[in-house]
Image (cartoon, rainbow, N blue to C red; front, side, top):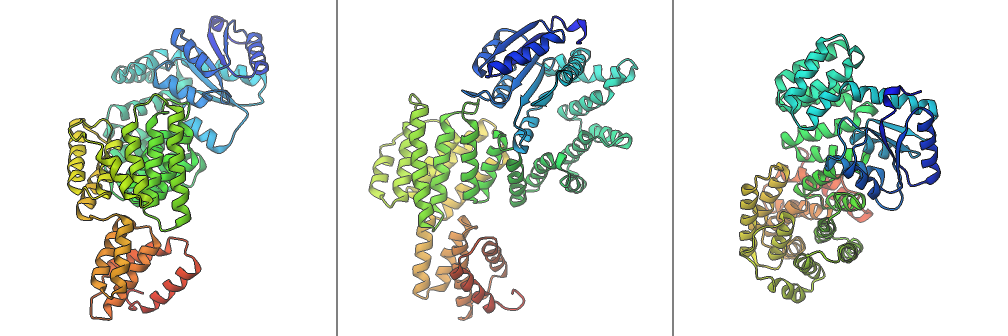
Length: 540
């Protein structure tokens, strides 16, 4: 039986199944709860949370018709409709690792897997509500972001003997607050002292965050590599390793760790956006496209659902199609990009996206070698003085201008994007690095990827090997994962060396790495094997 002090606890039950609702309500009534409200849909639950404050929310993950439990809780937290003093318990019959990892990242108070007994439900709730009541003052301060006062109360309670049962929770909260207050040196010593007493996982994670903030990267990396071996710390280790590698500007390694994290918990939209930015910076058009498609898949019906996510899938599809020589893949990507734009019109019929659609359709026409149609769409956009409303929109326009030969206009727009980011203090360093890279590459390389490759092949066939090397090098710069380009460049360098040209060993190694990391067909593999035989022994 629940403690009598909880008789007036206000409880919200969210489940789209009437039988499950009834069972939950009866179970709660039998252990002493009286103030119970039920909601079948996420939207109903949202409205209830806007008008009432609940002490406890029990939410089914699968809500069927609109938002699921994940989307609902994410929105409740984002809009601050649930406080730290509110207990939130997820309930689900599905316990796949991807779902569990995604839910855990939202940090609900508990996760109950169906089926469960009334006794288990009662035990979990009583423990949760006791904690919420005891630590209410601390949670209230955290809710209003008064971290200093919350920390002061925690230190006082840790010095007391009255709440000894909550010592581990208080210690964890103290560590979190030290990090929030940017007291990294103190946080480092605090987490080390906790680990000297007991090897709490949260303390290891906190120590790593402190070390990264203090630029003690080697120590942090060693800890994370050991944590990566343990299933319970693998996800956060991937995240922190990507953060560490980004600070060191090891972008390929950072992306690999982010890919690992997104595979474990694909519903984290913010992480998928991070992967988009770093994949673009790494010229990894495939992963950029995949991440954008995942954003679209998991953002529907959530707070992230917006016309831009449809536009970005199409943009990533065009970027990918322009940099692959697989005709079937180009056809599929072109079709999928067009389908995504049609879906945008269906989902957001009133959205003001005509200019963005015109730019994308111009790029699709360019992709199909329909240059006149592309020019007709671009030439009608006479709005150079308009302010930047969206960095993604403006980047796509700059790309379209460059592809169609308006290099000066493209360069001016890149400058404008940079100024916008400075004015509005955009702090995403990966995005800023990508914008800078795009501007530099498009200023230095006037042709698109396809044109570069075609020009280089023509130069090679004429025996103009130095020119072919220069052009293939430009193509390889913007398509570093394209094995065909790498093979062509490698062959050009070897043929030029027969005429006395010196070999660029660093560039040869990059070509070899790109070729060996891709799945080659039989003809490409035979060609690569023959080229390797021609390499000098010190390189081979």
